[in-house]
Length: 357
Ligand code: TXA
Ligand code: MG
Image 1: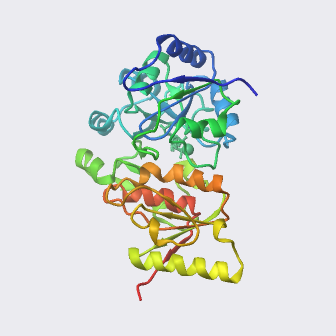
Image 2 (image 1 turned 90 degrees about the vertical axis):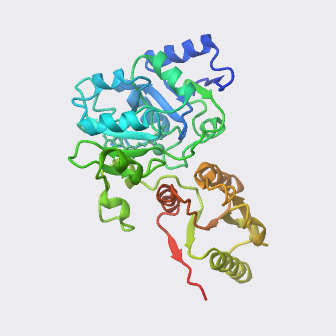
Image 3 (image 1 turned 90 degrees about the horizontal axis):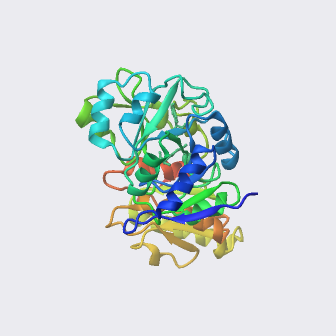
């Protein structure tokens, strides 16, 4: 165990310069600093040093074949870490960087295989977060950063979540408050003739296609079965998972609510579970409709930002120590692909389509 140092960043006050220098010194010395981004908190280390990558895998308890994303603060940093920058990638960078978009390139020789999980490609992203950009620019090296959670747990959307998982295992945590988006960046493979989405995110296929024409989805993302291997190695793991068994109910909102209530009634009557052992993932509008069970909401359906609260809600179920979680579906008008992807992963692809009767 080590003593993890906590420092603060806020939009109003920025960094205390001395503390920022301390964070930079840690990165340059090969240590680990967790930092906020607009998507989720990242666990950063020097992306050009293999020892730093090894420390990241150890702290997260993550399989080392799962490659890390290199975070940059300035466009010039891209030249040094990739072999070529395809024209389409330049256009996407212009349109969406800084922002929740990660692009995969052929890696330059200076990027160690420890960082890329043995691949000849490297994933790069410039986050849209003033604190992250200040930190990354000051660090002067590309910062390798996976999400700052223990492998298999939901990604952190608050510094408190990072603390729960990594306190005593890393050198520093930069507390920048709640993140804006709440789920990980869109990953696009730019090494193919037609860009391929490896992980859906806030930047949708339509948004990408508007800038570069045709963009396709990795076929493995569409398959509920595990028979097609995804091209982003991390997508094969049961990620984002709460401890309890989780099931997602899809269908008409009213039908879903009454189906979940019927199930709870049955479980309790048959003695399968106590009411407090049952978690329900709902919205502010539907929360009152569940007389039994522990309800957690992902905000209001009207506000259309379930993604922002999803991971925090899943972590809260862990704290309540529920044994099962019954979840509504959250169709978020534009980002629905990304949110359903995370929800289904949390549920280990366990979905039930509820018919209206
Ligand atoms: O929003 C985000 O992307 C956050 C913040 C911290 O930036 N980061 C994040 O990192 O989600 P991580 O390590 O949790 O997820 C990285 C994903 C994994 O699924 C990994 O397999 C994939 O990116 N990946 C990384 N490098 C790759 C490569 N060269 N080729 C294909 N997939 C890659
Ligand atoms: Mg992750």
